[in-house]
Amino acid sequence: MLQTMIVGSLPRPTWLVPPHQMYVSWQLQGESLQEGQDDAVRLAVADQEVAGLDILTDGEQRRRHYIWGFCEGLSGLDFSDLVEIETRGNRYGHTVKAARVTGPIRRPSSVLIDSLRFLKQHTSKPVKVTLPGPMTTADTLADAYYGDREKLAMALAEVLNEEACELAENGCDMIQFDEPCFNIYLDAVEAWGIKALERCTQSVSAKTAVHICYGYGVSAVLKWKTQNTDWGHYGRTLPLLRTSTIDMISVECAASGVDPAVLAEARGKDIMVGVIDVGTEAIESPETVARRIRTALEYVEPQHLYPCTDCGMIPRSRTAARGKMHALAAGASLVRSELAGGADH
Image 1 (cartoon, helix red, strand yellow):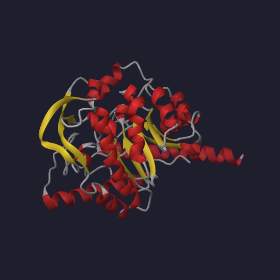
Image 2 (cartoon, rainbow, N blue to C red; image 1 turned 30 degrees about the vertical axis):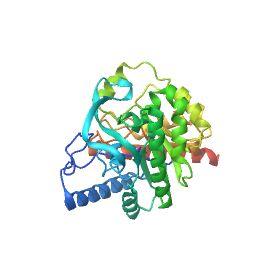
Image 3 (cartoon, helix red, strand yellow; image 1 turned 120 degrees about the horizontal axis):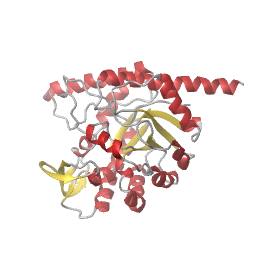
Image 4 (cartoon, rainbow, N blue to C red; image 1 turned 180 degrees about the vertical axis):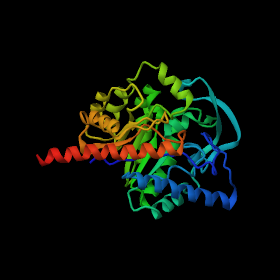
């Protein structure tokens, strides 16, 4: 019960990446970069092991960005001539640089298999690999080829499925698709977003998950959260996902205004519940984490509940990230002991 994990990312060492960068510029090159990334993964795994987490990732230490890290391995995309586009429904009021879609999207070779193999060499615990979801990836590209957002997303779903199947065949225990856009384009989620997500998971032998959050703990997102008054997005997406082929759903509950009662809309699915706020350096106490888990347990059966972070921890300091992981594991342990004691009686 209550197996713990992070969403995926951890802050990178400053000798590998300048601090507080979301779109990474590597400090190293060539063989030094490879060695530096290997060392960063070893540290990320060690931090999770020491904290006592149950399911591990490589901290996404090798990726420049959670979307670009996969897309740079594809053909049909031009990263040499980036253009400015609005993304996420312009929720945060700024544009971002985007690669152009210039031809049919293909996956010439595996993108993350070597990273998976390295991760598995350094832990005996179950491991998770994260991939960008097709809707969110389509929203982050400048399409000059398909001419239709759904067609682009389905093309991305094809190559994501190829990667996910290969990851599963090579021993990945869990494959997570990151879809923050599922909290933005609700009509599109219903029209074709679920279909694209299910295409990603077709014939994948590992457990599949979808992560739906309100964004990283960065200033633009935090500003939006303080002004937002509508937290009803999960009320539309969770019922759709409940009848989908996806195995697990990840939701943000610690730092959002989401009513945990909405978790009942996905009853029967495994649920990763965010009980760690990734938008602050403050480290939760185990008691605070335990209280959040107990609230979630009012709507999710213990065997289906996976305590987690709200989102990735790239923006946080390494000290805060370590502390938050320890609190996550300790808080889950408190509740696990309570549940075991109740069973004894």
